[in-house]
Length: 228
Image 1 (tube, rainbow, N blue to C red):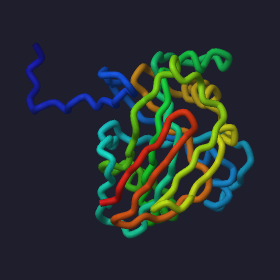
Image 2 (image 1 turned 90 degrees about the horizontal axis):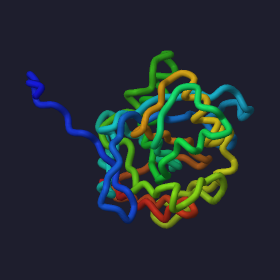
Image 3 (image 1 turned 120 degrees about the vertical axis):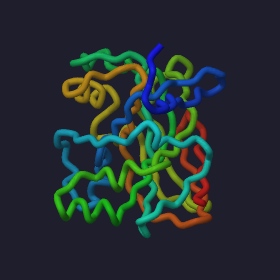
């Protein structure tokens, strides 16, 4: 038995829909500007350029149905996303069978301290302070692909207090699920337990305490998160 000098961190796990078992989370990769309309609203070229990624930490995940407004920011934005759960890892994964590595799919929110992100961009610094803060990744249960199939199209949207804010279709992703997995695996060795947040459509905006965010993707139901 290993004798740790301090108490070790708990394994972060995600719930699995209609199942008492859980999904152990290893890493969280996030692809940036993967919908052309969102790239445009953020002031960037919507063309198909090589993808780029940033990471959140496993313990940034939150399944409580609440989002605690963070300190050190007064401009926190929602970004609804399809989350891809990897069930089988590898390096240089072939594009043709990349979706064979997917365990399932979930709904997630990439909450962003936009004011801090803007400052980091101006200074040419990494975004972690804006993206990887506590409880910055509200998420719903994972639905296995064996039950759902592979999601390549379908409406993805987000309402805030009943008002539609974001709406797109999964088929509008610039880099599709198989391509994301193929590309990532050329630079990282993917493993079972990895999550990939696949980008957000246009319409991102600020939230305030008391807001209720309701995201949905066809086949995955809803993710309801209240800002506290």
